[in-house]
Length: 181
Ligand code: 5GP
Image 1 (cartoon, rainbow, N blue to C red):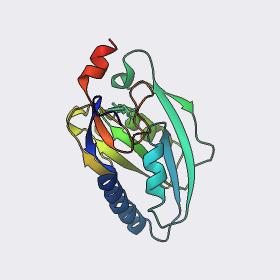
Image 2: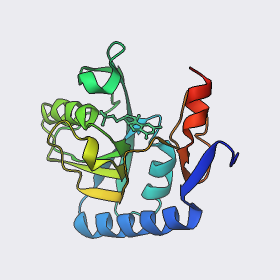
Image 3: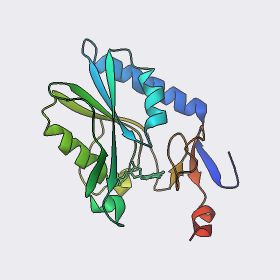
Image 4: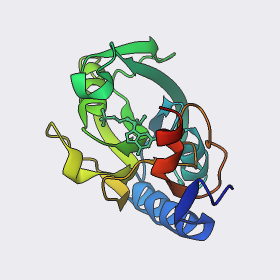
């Protein structure tokens, strides 16, 4: 990790401990049921890979990729499905796995879209939450950490497709994006 560019917010051990806790809670809540875990690409893939290995109920996995329309990105709330689910979710217990909730508009769209497909239930597991940025009512069922309004990278999260492989969640130093402007 280039510590001139980033500052560590949560290290490997802190992330591991939190993911274990989340996995245990999810396992208790879904005991006796079977999950369909839906990862939102690309950012959630590292968190999802770790989280599912801490969940002790039967599950299947699927993925969805979404992007925001136009330049206004997530704040527009207009979301396009780039890759849809492979499987039907009718009568399934769906757990959406997301990296971070910011305005909440992306996840709101995804949840509303999935609910039209008649699942038995839809819940959200999210590693990071920036509650002060919220523009819509959305309440994740499982949250790792609430964080301040800073741009974070690593553990799957990118800036211009970089940093996803960093093992820690890091705050990107403003000098990095100021340089590229
Ligand atoms: P929302 O619709 O909640 O505003 O947007 C959520 C999406 O915005 C996340 O899935 C993520 O792709 C992106 N995002 C929001 N905050 C951050 C951040 O601090 N770092 C990174 N890398 N992506 C973010």
